Length: 398
Image 1 (cartoon, rainbow, N blue to C red):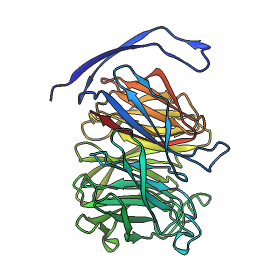
Image 2 (tube, rainbow, N blue to C red):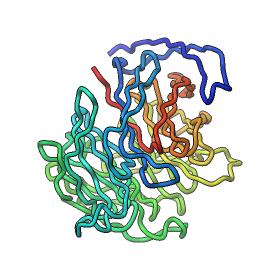
Image 3 (spheres, rainbow, N blue to C red):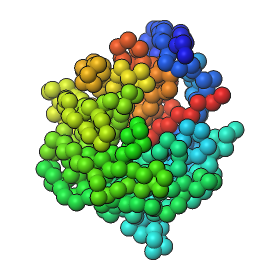
């Protein structure tokens, strides 16, 4: 497919209008054609902090004008902090990051996962069902390529990782497999016990990688796509640096390399990957060497071209930018302010043109353009106000 070329001119202005900058233009080569619009879903905290959201929000983003519509609430649910959507955009799945789902016996001392059907015309969500996750503070969800299994990670007590089958109508079965880690690590304030923080399938769908912040390890489990089960007896552990705190994990588009951000020591680690084996290549900082503040990394993502990698930093409130070398290692390429407070998840659109960064504590999402040669980010001036946004997901509209 030949790359398309777009040129936009957008005035950079934000805040209360006190800051203005001259008109600028940018031109990029996109890996895929830009759709007419994107529908954007946002998972937001509802009970953490001083400000309260109400659940999952949605808005439309026009990549040809760089403008977004006003967000609307599409589902009321407690702490839907992470979302995942299948490629056909028929359903949406959310983790429910709580300690107790409800008063029923099976809902006590557990977080959960919720299934929703997406209205293709309006984008509204219809709640199908919710299942207990057999562990507290469910913080991450992902799907297999066929959208027949949902995988979830629990940060709190109970199962570290859990899987659910997806029924024909998109609803979720009760859990079909659970894995519970044991142990601790160097930072006794944060690593007193296992803390599952993400679970992702390998590109071939044969294995699931669980990042455990509490025990400083990645554990790679065989995954049976026919049953949706993890084989807890054949997990392979890859240790991280003591006190690092592995958080989120992603693969390079080639499937040859993988990366994870370490929340506690402000680093990112690169690996070579082949058939359940992750071979460390490099661990480097995500903040300037003289940074001494508090916080931690949050999200990690590879550009669709495979040329760049980004990591969000809570505290300095930046995105660390890296150029990916042919051997999979990372070359630092600077930092970009997310223009808000406590950046969490961010998303890169499939064309590789835009990055949308969610700032949890400033209640906003800023839109950036991506330089296709350097990976540098430039704010477009577009800001979307959503209470306590945590996770952003895009659906291309035809």
